[in-house]
Structure formats: C-alpha cells, structure tokens
Amino acid sequence: MDSPPTATSLYVHVPFCAQKCEYCAFYSTTADGELVNRYVDALTLEVGRLVTKGYSRPQTVFFGGGTPSLLNLRQWERVFAAFDRAGWLGAAEWTIECNPATVSVEKARVLRAHGVNRVSMGVQSVDDELLDRLGRVHSRDMVFRSFDALRGAGFNSINMDLMFGIPGQSMDTWRNTLREILALGSEHLSCYEVIYEEDTPLFEKLKAGRFEVDDDLSSEMFEALVDAAATAGYTQYEVANFGRWSRAGTSGASTADTGPGTGLEIPPGVPTFACRHNVNYWQGGDYVALGPSASGFEKGVRYRNVASTQAYCEAVEKEQSPRDWSESLSALARAGEIAAFGLRMNVGWRWKDFFRATGFDLRDQWESEMLALVAKGWATLDADGFRLTRQGLRFADDAGSEFLRPEAPLYTANPSSYVAASWQSR
Ligand code: SF4
Image 1: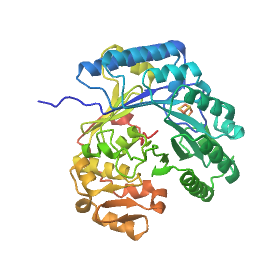
Image 2: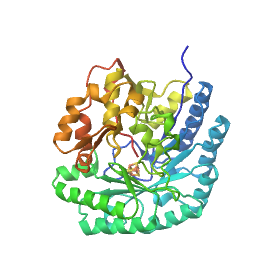
Image 3: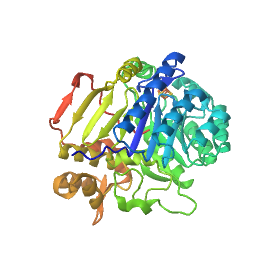
Image 4: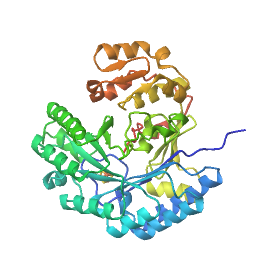
C-alpha cells in the first residue's frame, strides 16, 4: 500500500502583477478582478482536495508569484478560510512575497493575524531611476513605508530582495542601496544578479545594443555584497541568500536529527533566519505546487502546472489535474540534481546528509568531479563533507552541472510543454 502523501513544503503561485517588469520571465498577467476571484476559488478547491487525498499540514508555505500581496483583503480571507478548514493554519514558516506598492498596514495585520510569519519584499533597489528602468511599480519611499508597516504589524522575519548588475547601475548606487537596506536590519537578504531571459523587454534592449553587460562590475558588486552583509551581521548560507542569527545565537539545528529534506531542520552553520522553505528545495526535499505554472516535486516525480490562469481554473473546476508536464527521474539522476542544488549552500554537503537525502555516497559516484573542482580552487573536502569555496560559489551553477547525470527520464508526459525547471528559489 502507498504511504500517505506528505506536504512538507507547499508552494503557491499567485499569477498576477500590477504591471510586467522589464526583466521578468515568471508567468504572471495583470490582475483582472473576475479572474483573480476565479483563481482564488480554484485554489481553495485544490487545498480541499489535497486534504481529501490525505495531505497533512505543510511545515513551510510560500506564496510567490506574481505578486501575492495584490490579492485584496476579502480574497485573503477566503484563502485563510480554506486553510482553516484544511487544518493548515499555523505552518512553522509561512512566507508571502510582497511588492512594496501593495503593502498596507491593514493587510499586514490581517496576514500576521492568520499565521503568516515571514514576508519577502521585492525591493530590487532604492534608486528611483533604476526602479523605473526595471519597470517596477514601486518607489523608494514605498520600500521604507512598507517595511515600517510590516514591523508595526508584528513581522519579525522579513526578507529584502535586491538586484545587482542592473543596466546603468554604478558601484556607488549599489553600495548606497546596500547601506540603506542593511541599516533597516531585516532578518534576511536575497540578492540576485540581473538575468537576461529571452522574450523579456530587457533582453530585447540588450540585443538592440541599448546597453552593455559588464561582468567584471557585477563580480565586484557581488564581492561588495558579501563583505557588506558579513559586516552587518548576516551569514551567507547560499549563493544569493544571507540570514541573521536569533538573539540566542542558536542555529535552529536542534531539529537536525530528523535529517535533510524534512523541511524544517537546517544544517549546522545555517543561520536561524534562513528561509527553511528554500533550504528544503536545496536539500532535495519534496514540495507540493499549487497555482498556474507552479513546479512541484513529490515522491520522485517532478511536475509543472499549466502556465495559464484560465486553463488552470478550468482544470480545477472540472476536477481534472492542472499539471501539463511531469517527469520521473531515476534515483541517480535525481541524486545528481540534489547534489547540484545543495552545493549552492555554503555548508555544501556533509557526506551523511547527502546519503540520507539520496541513498548515494558522493564519494562513490562523484569522486573525480569533486577532485577536479578542488584542484581548480572552487571547492574543499574533508572528513565531514564537500563544499564550494567563495570563488566556487560565484560559479555554483557551473560547478553543480558537473554532478548532473543526464539520462532518459523514466517517463515524461507532455514534453513539448516543458519549460526548463527553474531553481524556484525565491
Ligand atoms: S513583480 Fe515579480 S513576478 Fe511580477 S512582473 Fe515584476 S518580477 Fe515578475
């Protein structure tokens, strides 16, 4: 008999934005009231169905997008009511992504009152000219106002998302953004270099020669970030993620004996305010996905929901699966992926944790790859495990690709609609 389904982590994609940012390749559309209501109905139906299938309350919940904070209070109340009926309120970590233009004091209070305990704010920059260039709807003033509203509502775990390598961004502007944001004292920082995704307006402008990419400057910005975050008391625990420690200085590793992949525990050396939801991704844990275009991974099967809000709603309303693609990987191929994801974390892999997560020993399967990375100065290994160096972390995707074991999946459904799985680390 099959073991009951688990829902260690739940990702919910909210596919609406006030307008499309210049660089964005995530699936989202502008919000149309009727469609948003239909989407909320579909979401609540899906939650109910997961409960009927035996899913228990997830330990981490992450509403990403899109712009989840675009849902109005009535729509949030319906989402919370569905979670309440499911017995899913009270997840240990519940994150909602917010755009600074859509955070009000009242909304922040309602979210907090229903158990949302972490907010990830899409700041990107505090320079109005750069925000405008990125097509963001918010201004620098809104960043500070929203931050105060969240603190006033009782949020003591806030992530600030920043971007560097923005066309026209100078080192001075970047240092200024870092200085102002670090001074706020949020518990977490995520900082990503601008990526030029095909089919985005920013990519078209790059192709048209409207600006040039300066990789050296981006590298310097990354180095400045790592140094400034460390000086401000943050610990880098993943290539792009930095967290603070709780006042007690504990690592949160007290639950580590449950092993990686169970969602809540974090390995020693990872700060208390690390995003446990994302740590679960990087450590190869299962996660359920709801909403159009959301990707999930459960019991060896990777899947993606259809990237259309109408099609998603229609499928759910007809009690059909909204998945438009799924793939089952062999255990070794999946272990290679998990190795690559996990190496994005500064602590890398302890031999025993990797074995517990995958059933494979890194030293048996990937010895030559690890030694080659050590010889390049990109990694170190010792009696406990293997990790990337500061230099290696800068090239974590290249280093991680050495561990992939491309092979035919055990099965693939609807391969034509597959869009390369993103790291989904947001
Ligand atoms: S707010 Fe986020 S999801 Fe929406 S368009 Fe901008 S980057 Fe994309």
